[in-house]
Amino acid sequence: MRGLGSQQTTMPLSAQISHSIATERLSLGWLFPCPTDPELSLALEPGNEFVVGRDEDCTVRFLGGDISRRHARIHREGTDLVVTDLGSRNGTYVNGCRKMSERLALNDIVRLGGRIGIITDRPGLTKEISPGLMAGPLMQFQLEAAMRAATSDLPVILEGETGTGKEVVARAIHTWSGRSGPFVAVNCAALPEALAEGELFGYRRGAFTGAERASPGFFRSAEGGTLLLDEVSDLPLSTQAKLLRVLEQHEVQPLGETQPVGVDVRMIVATQEPLNHAVHQKKFRQDLLARLNGICVELPPLRKRVGDVLPMLTRLLAKLTSDRTPAFDVNFVERLCVYDWPFNVREVVLLAKRIAVLYGEETCLRVNHLPNHMIGLLDHVTEEIGKPRAELVQSRKEPVEFPALIAALRASHGNVAQAAAMLSISRQRAYRLMQGQAVDLEALRSPSEEPP
Image 1 (cartoon, rainbow, N blue to C red):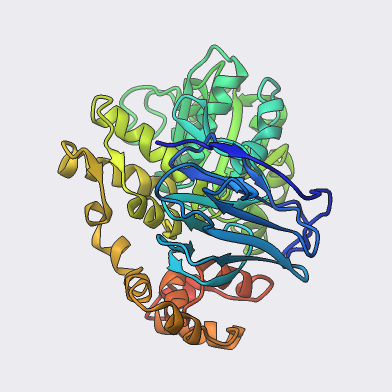
Image 2 (cartoon, helix red, strand yellow):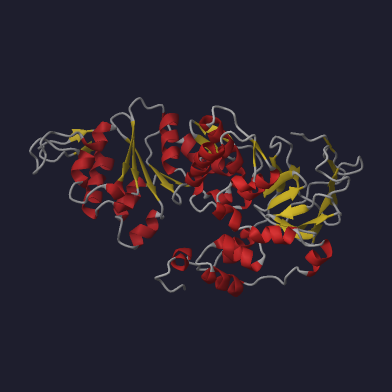
C-alpha cells in the first residue's frame, strides 16, 4: 500500500461549506488503501480549488501509478462542492459511477484511481472501543454520553435498526461500568406472555403448574451486574407495570413469595422503534418510559457510517482466517462502500463468515467473491464505466424530483439502492430527497400493502 507522499496547501481553509443538509466543515477522509492518510479539509472559498495528482505542482500530491499526473480537482460552485476529472487514466468515481463532473454531499464515496474516500463531517479512524465493538467517529460520538454515564446507575435506552449492534453496545456499557456481576441479555419478544413475569422476577417451587423447582429469574441472575431487556416494548403491559417497582424500589416480587427481594441491577433496554412511538400506539407504558429514559442512545445504521465497514470486515476476517487476511481489490472495497447494508452489522458478520468458508485461501478478494445480490445492484455501474467520456457527459440526466423517486421505490418494492440505480442517482441522493417526507419504506417493501 502506498501512503500520502506529500501534501501542500496553497489556499485559505477558513470558510465553512454550505451544504444541502447543514452548514458544516466537510472533509475527504481516506478509507483505502491507507486510511491513516491525513483527511483533506474541503472548506474551500469560492474560486479556490484542490488539484489531486502526482505532479509536484498539485495541491494534494499522491505517489503511485494509480493516480494520474493531474487526476481531478475539487472546487466550489456557489454553495456546492464539485469534483471534476482532469482526463485521468483510471477515472474519477462517485458512489460507484464514473463521472466527468459531479456535485458532492455528505457520505458520498469518492474514488480517485485506486484510492477511495468518503465525504464526512466527522473525520477520524474506526477503532475497537470495547471488545467486539468497532466504532468510527459517528458511532463514537453517539456513544459519548453512555461512556460517561457507564459507572452510574442511570438506565439506558438503545434505539436502532435490526443488526446495528445493540447487544454489543450493551455489553460495552457493562464493561465500562466496572460492575462485578454478570451481563444477562433477555429477548423480551421470545418470552411467553403467561410466563414473562416468572421468567423476569423468579418464582418459588410449586408457584404454578409446572414449577417443579424454584427459579431466581433474570433480574436476580444479573445481581451486581447488568440486565439487557431487548425488544422491551414486546413485554405484556401487565409485566411492564411490575417493572415500575423494580426501578423505584430496587426489588422484585418472585411468584409465590410473600416478601420482595432486593436487587442491585443496572438496567439497559433496547428497541428497534422509538419507545415514544410505542407509547403513542398504546404498546408501552408512559410512566415506565419516564423511569427508563435516563440516557437514550440512537445507534446509526451502517449506511450512515460506511467508513466502519472495511475495518470491521478486516478484523472479522483476521479472526476467522487465523490472521491470514487477504488483500482487497479496489473494486471490491468500492462495492462494500456503496452497498446499503439493510441488515447492518449482522450482514457484515455473515459476509465475513461466507468469505472465510468459500474464499479463505484467496490472496486477494475481488468483486466476484461478493454475493450476487451485492453485485447485481450495481450492474448499471459496469455499463456506465464502459461508455466513452463524451457519451457519459451527454447521458447526464436532469435533476431527479421526489415524485420520480417514489415511483422508482414502488417499482423496486422499497429497495432504495435499486430505486437510485433506476434513476442514475446515488443512494445518498435518494435519502436526501426522502428527508422530511413521509416515506414508509416498510409499506413499500410489503407486497400485501398498498404503498402511500
